[in-house]
Length: 195
Ligand SMILES: Nc1ncnc2c1ncn2[C@@H]1O[C@H](COP(=O)(O)OS(=O)(=O)O)[C@@H](OP(=O)(O)O)[C@H]1O
Ligand SMILES: Nc1ncnc2c1ncn2[C@@H]1O[C@H](COP(=O)(O)OP(=O)(O)O)[C@@H](O)[C@H]1O
Image 1 (cartoon, rainbow, N blue to C red):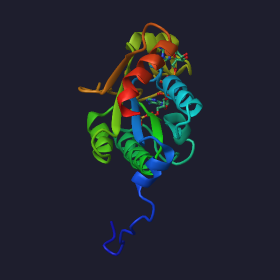
Image 2: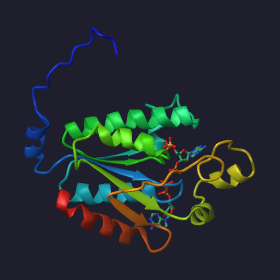
Image 3: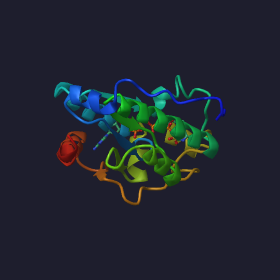
Image 4: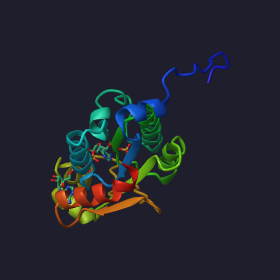
């Protein structure tokens, strides 16, 4: 960073915003394979928050890659930069007093740890969307696994690019069985201490 860039103190503090909103801001960091259910669950829990009067928003991998991160691909370096930017944006949302759900594969433990490190203790809740690769591949909602198996996508997570599962996520949702509704209820129950 340029040495001539000087931080300007914000007039309205995060604590004041949270007091006005009546709840804390925090990140729900969904991570998991493509097709595991990140977007479905992040949007469902966001719907729950919205209907119960919380300030909330979803940052979704596919959508953010249409705009802010449209310059990035799927090399390890680009994924790292993707997650670095999302970590920063999620941090801004938390400072604005919002509950932000991020739905990115975020395959590397080190990148998730850096995103976590930006937030105060307890404000980064890692949600492992735990679904067997075979089930994700059976679902294949966008036909991407089929393309990857056919050799048309060079570095597809789970097929020919790595996914490092979280070692100590705050929440693990098993999405290979049951319904998304059950997972959302389980998640909301686990979030009660944070709300
Ligand atoms: N090579 C490769 N590997 C994985 N995924 C791919 C790839 N190419 C395109 N897609 C589509 O991009 C979505 C993943 O983007 P993310 O930003 O979440 O990925 S990452 O966190 O940077 O790894 C992912 O969306 P989800 O299925 O919602 O996870 C895919 O639709
Ligand atoms: N328990 C579950 N949780 C979430 N999604 C599920 C579940 N069971 C089946 N699905 C289906 O799996 C697919 C997951 O897709 P999506 O949410 O886009 O995953 P991701 O964002 O991880 O790529 C959806 O078609 C969804 O309806």
